[in-house]
Image (cartoon, chains in turn orange, blue):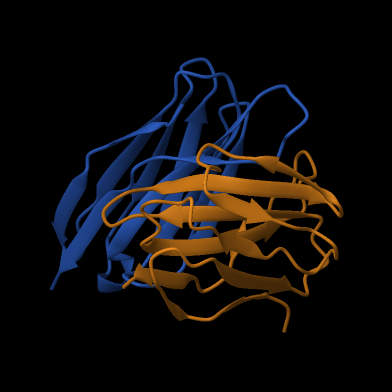
Length: 115
Length: 113
């Protein structure tokens, strides 16, 4: 079955460390997105990519970096510059065709905690 | 700018109905609705495109008023499985970054037996 796989499910980061969250999809979707969710809040866009080797900053990109070297993969690095990284991170994909009837497909998420 | 959802929380008994609203200050191309269970990823419910159409999914339906940039999600004869947090996601008209969604803060729906 097609879907999005995020790993790891839980991640602990020490102060000053960079960590990378994995996101892989086999849906053949062109567009991929990273969102951050804090307790009791909505989803905020970190980065997104519509095609390979191209990506754009979202609303809260500071302290994060991404790459899109393959269509299937869109890893997110949380750098030491991100001062409050503890959150639930969600990866999503979609075929951004106008008038499409399908929404985002989300991965199961990675819960990142600073220790 | 983030769309505004109302109410923030709803408590129902099985069989009761609820309406969740989503309002944006931007011109919208589409509105998405998602449901998220605690600790899980959001699940896509439906998409409303401009034109004020109403769509349905089992006992859950939605409408989109393009002129007012507002959408409403209707849950009828609620079931225990409807419990969760409901998010609207809006896609703005124009521009080249279509497909990108801005989410509301969520509405917590709790259904009791």
